[in-house]
Length: 319
Figure 1 (cartoon, one colour):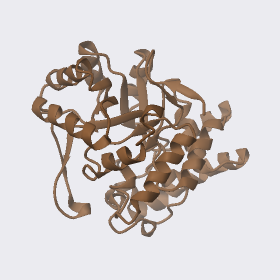
Figure 2: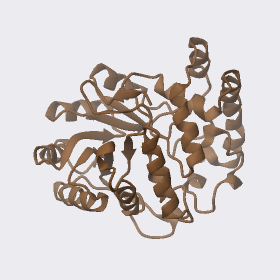
Figure 3: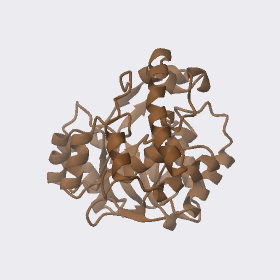
Figure 4: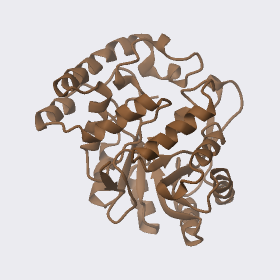
């Protein structure tokens, strides 16, 4: 696979990464055998996918354990990324809420716990999952910088921040990357994307497939498992979902001209948004993984990109 760097002089990784969240949480009822998820992660590495992204809140905790298990003996082949700053509450899958925690003592304990679960002595990219409105960003980010100095973390990044927050953090310690949802149906962070390019910072789009919708495989809410958290998403409500199928039809028309799949066009469009952009589509199946990876070889024409840029936004709010 072609390589990209997460920002000027940043970590070099495969042009497409792997988001592991859905393997254990949010899109899963837990029916997937861990052994199968291990195979997916290892196959990804075989294919040149080297940015492996997880977080302590996914599960919580079992996603990092899964990733650590999958990378046993192959740790030096990947850029391992995880996050801290979100805490998952108790209760049924569709009712569990998350709180934000950016307190220094929490971050210090969280990184040590992640290192243990991942079975490694360092994390390549440690990301602040969300900025805590109750804690000054400078205070939280200062602790992240301490972790770099201590050798526990190589580089540090942010997730879903504003341009102002990114600039504040960057002035304290270099921001290696910013991770935000970005796709043909979520372009809310265009100003942040522009900031990353201007400042030589990596941009990691999660859900580049529109939470799976842009693959064309979801045509009704009944295609989602009963405890799939996408059922709570306004864009997957029956009326909005029906309207959003027209968006997939437009993407499919371009895919057909290339002998490709809609999801591959969606990923290729995201990759075309900048040289430091590395999307991290997630999947639980090797066949879908291989489809996603093949998107790195899809060359969209200027006409394709213009048509995709002009697509109407989806029906329904992001959350």
